[in-house]
Image (cartoon, rainbow, N blue to C red; front, side):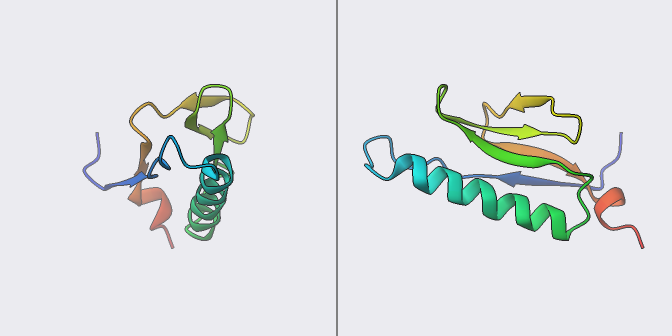
Length: 81
């Protein structure tokens, strides 16, 4: 296992915020833009409205729920020349 990793975590909007869904979707879109600039292989953050949690999808369309609101990324991949 590599030690060259970076943790990216999204903040959950307040549960009682009337704009919760909008805030979460915007934050997921910003995080997706960031990892794409870093050289993501097509991964994408998104907000799962039904489960009220962030998820991360890969280029094949499969996804994982981010119960801890974040994901480890490999810096050897993002940092490649």
